[in-house]
Length: 178
Image 1 (tube, rainbow, N blue to C red):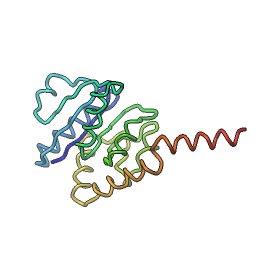
Image 2: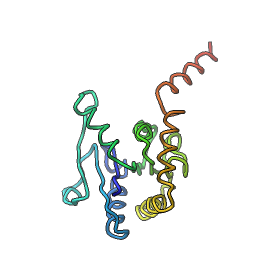
Image 3: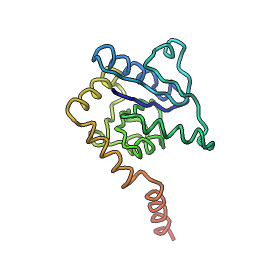
Image 4: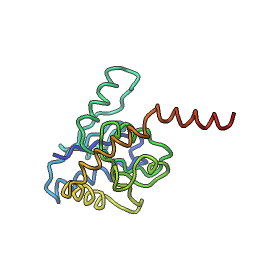
């Protein structure tokens, strides 16, 4: 089964429509057993009627119960889909990498700082639609790249996308300016 995870409150800006249509295409055209879990904003009633959509809703990571549930969803998923249309810096990509999730996203704002195309996932030109997302997911599954993306995602987290590394970089910059 393909267990996709999407996180975002502003569903339009975060590209939920692409994620949802990708899920449907994977199921209907490719015949795959697929679910899409949504943490954040609420999909439309028609989308919520789809039995492959799992809606979690908004969560407050300052509350232990929500914090634990938030990260439990990352551990259940096997890919992170984040077709954001406007993004500066999405910490959620670091969270996905920490859970070794391959990340499928657009090259928007700072996303390519987190995701390297064909290394820990796919980074698409913003003109790619849900058909391109679905085809890339199937290709990665069928050619064994999903496992490589997963391994590389966690490696990227360990090497670069963690708070200790960030602190070291900031400290280094501050030391140069002293």
